[in-house]
Length: 587
Image (cartoon, helix red, strand yellow):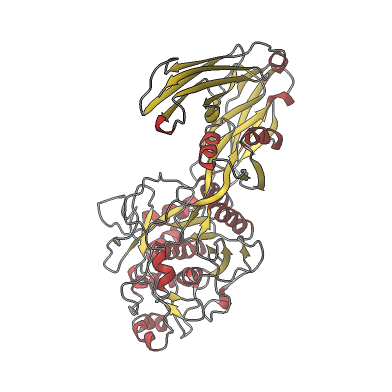
């Protein structure tokens, strides 16, 4: 170990023997600025509520021309193809409000979060001593942990990486060739687990871990939410305990869902905060650790994105690492702050293999060196990572969990139901909930593994009469907590015999009125049993839809093609009865 520590002081001399590939700046510079808003054309990602059948899902997406192209069963999200004439932005907004859909979003393309180093010959591996990695190595070097690198692939022939790798997968081409097509992934992998203490090349943070390459990118380095989420699921199912994503994906519902799946299997996901240099309003989430970048003076770099979603900060400027083709480079970006954090996570998990993900995350945040404003702040999160303090706390943390989760059914709270019934459940645990089961009269209906826990119960498969609904939450230790039962009355026979159509009204604007450049349209509906859908059409084109009794929509009338414009409200009930009400307004 002393020999290894002495090597760190002489890293600067490596410039005489290193083939520096930092000046692969054409690709890197292109990703330094914020990328334009891009997504995969004619594709959206949705996650139906647990228990919704494929037939019922088809009924939801077919009116928009949608076709479920691929299903990722462990996370239950669907990749949906739309016809060329469809407006994927409008369809995703409409479906996101459907009561049987947990989320719907565009399959966005995200750029790499690397930027060029100001000094390409900056050869001092300052980040290792800054986070006290050498002290941590006296206790843990990452043995027994596999870190998935979800990126552009990893160079399998690099002398500092070849012996560190386990088989991976190419999500972009759907084959086992996970070699690097860009260069970014090889740089990221070297920060985590380049071979070290071998008198060659660079020193990594967790140099006895194994690297699992998962290529999720196009040849130009851009990756889509769908390949990233699919890659996370694959990595979780194939033994990865840590996953690093050096892309700005903190706001993606699909990626969050896949990260929660990995978390439920005992894994931790670390992602880059982004390189926009400005405030990002993305909401924080518990499924992944989002990381900003610091420099050698412990200051946030000017290009590092900040906001409430940032959990931690880590060195990300001029980080010595491996480069595609066998050389070495000193790139910068949150792309490299993220794997620095993932490397420390691997050290922590190796030091105490019984730790649950929530415990690992708590160790990382509670042992970080506080920077900036005292306590949590949007620039540094809970602080800059400290490997020595984190590993020490890991060895001192007790892992026995005997506390059961708490759970309750939020809706329905009673009454009469029919058809496909939305059920929402609240569940929490001192460590973390891994699964929630919904039962009707003691019979399992469906299971959900990602919060918010929500179900679509097909009550037509249950005889009419009183039904007791209960929810059961399970944590990683196997502790179970059951909710109080909710009594509902199933009345599908009544619903089927229902011949009374719902009512539909347009409460604003009024018929014949003149509207300005923008107007708020308000719809209302009512039914003797229940309204199942309320839709808004303007000049025959659907603009919005909901499964509640009211709908509000802000219409920018500058888009109107006609002087007189028709606004229509369409209300439907479970029996298929439908009512349309229309008015005309002058623009």
